[in-house]
Image (cartoon, rainbow, N blue to C red; front, top):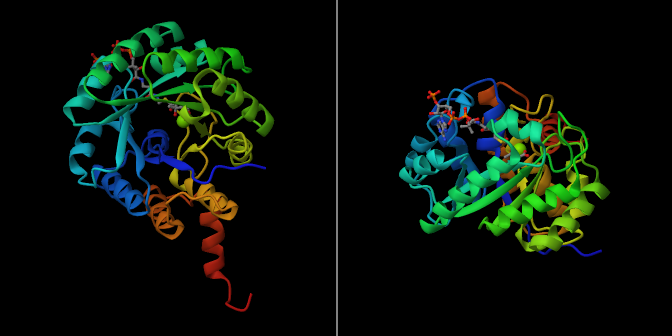
Length: 306
Ligand code: HMG
Ligand code: MG
């Protein structure tokens, strides 16, 4: 068995997590969450989106959020951008990294961004070219990579073709989104191997939601073939507004716990991460969805002798 020595974790909770919560949090709380995540050692954090406020009000004021954060410049903070208007707002806020988001399913693309997959890719080619001219790193997502909430099965070849196109237009990293968490380990690994043949495994990230409880197993299966960038959402927050029933991404603390156990370096402190998890869960009035947070809370309640 071969595993990477080090895995880079991309924290998407402040974006993918909070975008789907019914509570619209005040900006102070979003600021505090990002700061706690940075203190835990997360150096890549997707903090918001420059999308329509009517459609995703939870992500309004992402520009202000950027300007309120005074974190080390070594931190890579990013935001979703759906079009050139979003890019301009991101540039005005001083954003250094963006993410564009295409889908491998026509219906999902229409529901999510109101255009076809083809139209979205044409739009992103312009966005990414402009971003790169300004020295901005762009990540590209492929949603519904392992299944669509509307169309069911999705062709891995179609996912690979979209990943290749996003990579070809200048996205420096492609994140494969199991938007509704339906993947299982061999299917996930097979897809990663297929896409890696197109763009190289070093340019791939795993973005697995945990709806069916498969995300950790899927990540492990993909680490075995060399994937080394993993997206997680603190406390397992979130889902997707256009994927009914989908739960949050795999909880970052569960990923960190697994990787620590495997002897894989992440640079993240689990205790500090749990502080961020407890903080945001309390703010939302939820118990954390992560197994590690629940286990640690239960262990604190047990008598010392047990
Ligand atoms: P549209 O209706 O086709 O666009 O929406 P439009 O150009 O006709 O504009 C409609 C309105 O939005 C106008 O406002 C525009 O000004 C405004 P109005 O005149 O009606 O008041 N608008 C904007 N406002 C702010 N920022 C912008 C922007 N662009 C237009 N950039 C659009 C198209 C993409 C804008 C819309 O559908 C949208 O914002 N969708 C949000 C999509 C979203 O955020 N989805 C969730 C993230 S994706 C995800 O979670 C999956 C992922 O995690 C990976 C995975 O799990 O698989 C990434
Ligand atoms: Mg997602």
